[in-house]
Every structure is written in structure tokens, then in C-alpha cells.
Length: 91
Length: 238
Image 1 (cartoon, each protein chain N blue to C red):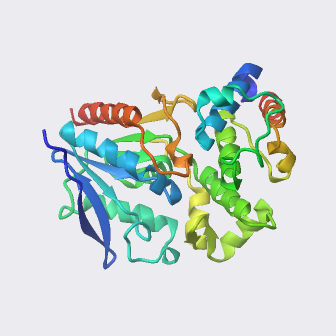
Image 2: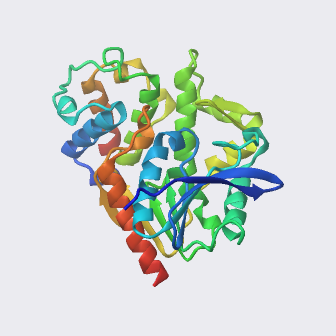
């Protein structure tokens, strides 16, 4: 059921999730690159937001994220999160 | 035109009083609210929709579910089926409201709308119970320094009352929510945000207000949804 997404759609979906959950302007999130630091660097990215980002990604990408797939590294940089979301949704 | 007023009163349920908010006059639209913290985040948004519907000639009723909002009942006394029962008895009590023409439900409230004997249903961003319990579990994990595993939290919540994002949920409520699925009933119109890839009859631009820590509203989203509810309610009544 994940085949409906291509890599660009995953990128767009991840950016819209971050914009929506963190309450950041879309233009700011669109400027994120692979090295942009997230958790620990963005004050909006607290532990409650981590839960919201995971659940929104699951809903919008029709994926299931297991407990043991989530660690601090995943949210450290935008690139980590994008690689993870692509691997999950395009598998 | 004067702005429609929100009115508060009680309804009876199992020998106790629960609160509801209502607005406008005309055919009744019953609102099944989002659950727990999502309701707090969406309340201003839902009241904005009620205001538009009052202007469009509808009476809207927004009940507090027993154990939430202004309820004097303890949440830990309740089970999932109590919420369906409360909505059902409330909607059928001729002393409370006229027979609703439509139930408009939001997020987790959509899991309760099949309890209501209305001819038609309208849903916004409906979600299965497992998605909501995952949110609750993740919020609990995020708030715990030792980051308990999901399975451990689920097991604990099935055995004894457990706190999730400020709500102490008894096993009978948590387990029922976890297993609740959206009823597949004819005459249901579904609206979703355009960012949500799940199928829907209507896609609208907007942010998921139930995710944002500061409760807010969205003027264009509330107007767009109210217009759609009014059209659907008129089609149902025709």
C-alpha cells in the first residue's frame, strides 16, 4: 500500500508534517536541508512533538513505526528523518 | 445580524448531570467531539463551526462526554461503551433536544457516531482507536525519563488506571478505545485535510489543530467545513 508514494511525495509529506506539528511557517521548513538540526536545536521540537511527528507520518504515509526504530539519532537532523521516512514508505 | 450566543445547560445521564453547549435554532446537528487533549485543542475551532452553522439556520449541540469537560463524574469510573451509551441516550431524549438530522463528528468522536440513530453522518479527520492510543502511549513515553516500551505501557494500561497526557484512563476505557474502529455505515460523508492521503469525499487545506500545543482556530477551515456540513444536512433532510 506504500507504492502510491514517490520520493518527492515523501519529502513533501515530511515537510508538511514538521510544519504542522511544530507550528513553523512552511517556507522555513522548505529551507531545511539534510544537515538541518532538529531535536535539541529547534525549541518547538520537544518530546510531545516527537509523538505528534511519528503519528502524523504514520497516518499520512500509511506506514507503521515500531518502538525500536525510534531513537535520538532519528530526530537529530532532517536528513536522518527523511532517509527513515523514505525507507519505510518506499519499501 | 447579531452574533449567535453559546448557551450552556445540563443533560441527565445515569442519575447525574452532564454539560452541553448549544447554539442557534433550527434542525439539530449533534456534534461528537474529539477525545481527551484533542478536544481542548479543537474546542475553539468547533465552536467557530457551530457559529457558522447557527448563521446558516441550524441548532448545534456539543455535549461534554461523561468524565470530561465540566462533568462531575470521574473518568476512572467509565468504560468505552459508556460514552456510546451516553451519546445515544442523550440524542434520543425528547426533553433534551429534537431528533438530530445529522451527527457531525471529529477525530476520535467518529468512533462513537454509529451509536446514534441519525439518518446521516458527517466526519472530519476520522481516526481508528489504535492510532489514538498510540498517541497516548507515545505522549506517556515522551514524558517518562526511562522511556518504557510500548508493550509495557499497553500491558499496564489494560490492568490498572494509567495516566496519559494528564488523563487517568481506566482499563475499560483504554482497552475499548484501543479496539474501536470506524463503523462503515452508508450515508457517511468524510472530510479530511488535504495533507492526509486517506480517501475522503472532501479535501480541505488546513493544519491539524489537534496536534498543536496552543489551542487555536482556522477561520477559512471552519467556514469551509461548516458550509459542507450545512449542505450535507440539507441533503439529508430533503
